[in-house]
Image (cartoon, rainbow, N blue to C red):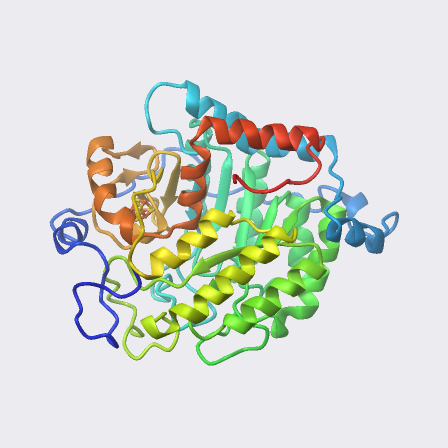
Length: 435
Ligand code: SF4
């Protein structure tokens, strides 16, 4: 829920949204987290080769207009190597996770290379500019450790991941050379053409561009206007290098029309969209000072207008607009903002994981600031029964997009239907979500 039972004042946002008892368990100073032991191997990342694909650096031999037309019509073509990379990243690890004994088989890991950001969105508590970024040693050890697990999807995460573009290039290059399918989220402000070419050359698989407004608005600096030229370059170069681009929006009480406009812009350019609904912090965030008088968190008087936007998005998806969220998932946003979400088979800590900048682990992004000890890379300490008990209480308050998608995917009938649909299309572009 967006407003909480702990707080009887309609206009005051709660400091946290979990049950008080669970919140105490997760934020007990006595439960100090483990510390990553000193390295026994290399403490830096190798310098990436650039260009690995000199033939892709230029513009010759590609008809961008035709590629864009195909994308808009949903007919983008993929090479066998690109299909193979997606299979290696997603399908094989998924199968292994179903067949191997035990419950800890991460498919996707969020590697928090940064906890600093260059912007300051009023709803966002997911950064603290006092925290140093991940070191090369921790990044390297994380990837090496993950290679020993089922997981082959690595999502760089922040803060803003491109605060150190050269570091991001090294991490992506190291991970792709070891068989990882790499996801890069960014607010786009530092995504310059040279950076795009370097990250694409290193093999980034998808770029998730977080944009909440067309023009910069009060409290919503993640806007398309300041980054438009670079976004156009990013969209064009995807056909050269074979990555994909998503537009990722956070629905707040202040940007409902912007979300409609951005959805239309994405559709016109043949790129998919992904929606979140604004959430105040699940656990207390002492470094976040914008909880009160916040003009972005949704209030009961906004429900009808937000419902209207969600219905509009569902209609657009039925019209063929490509969206990461299923129709069912979009519709659940209505229940969530009213505090009526049911348990939903969260897979965090089992099939997804986060690695903080210091190499410590947590099951999920909402638990980033928890002091509970889930261990470190190389020495995870995830206790299955305790995790399951925790989820009985946090699920009704949580709208984690990734973990909802994973929950949806851990249903064999659904996955078989989805793979059959992709196979019928010759694995050429994703046909629909896990509906
Ligand atoms: S429901 Fe899952 S993703 Fe959400 S806070 Fe709980 S463990 Fe984390």
